Length: 255
Image (cartoon, rainbow, N blue to C red; front, top):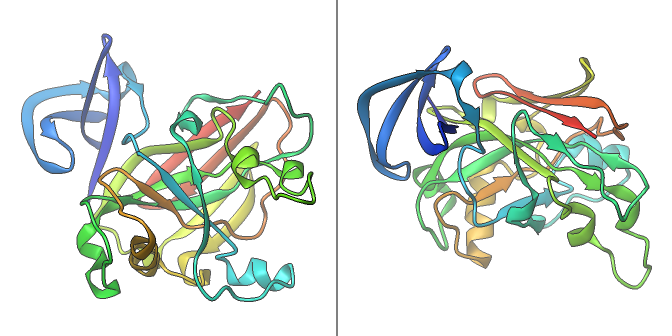
């Protein structure tokens, strides 16, 4: 298993693998045969960035069996998704910003992120693992009351699209079996979400296959697999941690 990290050190952005508290710096391209150097840095001396720079995050709605049952929602026939734009992306350790134009409830949603490693289109499900680089933590932050504010037009893009509304990280983990993972969300240190990938209607490999029928996926793009039960509003001053064993902890404050 490798944990890939992007970081800034002395105003230079770089990437490498992290083990414990030490980063080994790599050269080249994360998605195309990166080469290790002999240079290392203490993790404590760098500013952690998002682990990649996605062109898009494809985020799922209604992909949790237990949440669908709780909300009396039917099982979807195909993935239901929306997009989150680059202005939403936020690194671990940074602050989720309360929107100035909205004063309603803002929810955290802890999710598993599937990081695409190769340009792909129409991928058979049995081949999907070959185009996945690895996995990361995602917090799909939502301005809940905007979605149905206008009865003529559900505002998914606006509700999900404010600056800082998509924390990602802290690393991309490779060599994991995603179907064994569980996703937790901790609000101010208290566990609020704890659900498994096995609870999903569409597992990661199926999502890559089905979504790639609709759109080309590029290296660095992320599919955020949808959240489970327990997503709740955050109050300013809160800390929200998304924890996935084998990947790590995505930690952000909300102000």
